[in-house]
Length: 287
Image (cartoon, rainbow, N blue to C red; front, side):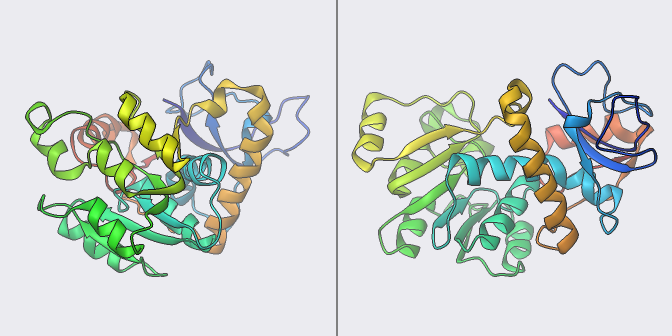
C-alpha cells in the first residue's frame, strides 16, 4: 500500500521545483526505498506538491490519498459531469466523504448508503444535501429499488462501490450480507451508458452479467490507486490531481472526516483497530 507523507523539504542539487524549508505533500511510490513512517524520507520531486498554508498537516495527510482515489474514480474512470446521478456506497467513509464532495462540486446529484445510524446522521448533515441516504444497517433497505425510485426508473450514471457480494446468502459472512449489495443489485440500478467503478479486486461476472452490461452499454472499471505509481505516463496527471486536491482542501470544497491524530508509538494499535473495524474516519499518525 502506498504511504502518504508530509515534510519540510531538504533539497538536493538537481531539484528545481522546491526551496529548502518548503512544506510539501506526496505519496510514496511502490518502489520507494524509504518507509513513510520515519523522520527522514527521500523522494523524487515529481511525486511532491506544495502544501497550502491554510491546510494543516493533519488535514493534508488525511485527505491526499482519498482525494487522488476519488479523482481517479469519478473523473478519469467514470467521466463525471454536471447533472449525472452518482451512487457512493458507504458515503461516511473517508473515501466516500471526499467522493461525495467532489461529485457535488461538479454539479452531480448524489445518493449514498450508510452502514449505521451515526453514519446516516452524518450524511444527512452534509451540505449540499444528498438526494437520498439509504440506511442499510438494518438489512431491510433495498439499494437497487431505492435508487430506481429516486431516478424515476432510469438508474444511476455512476456507481462507486465499497465492495460487493459475489455469492449467495449462504456463502457470505453476516456483516457482508448486511452492509454490501450483491453484484446483481449494482447491475440492476446502473443506468444506460453507466459506469460502475469497483473496489472489489476479485469481482466475478458471469456471462449473463456481461450480457446485461452489453445491453446497457455500461462499463466496469477497477479502482486501483496504485496505478499512479505503476506508470511514468501517469505522473503528470498525478501531480495535477494532487495540486487540485490541495487547492480544494484549502478552499473548503473538501472537508475530510478525520479522527484525532495518534502518536507514532500508538500507530500499530490504531492500524490494527482500523483494519478490524468498519471503515470510518481517517486516522493520521502524528510525529
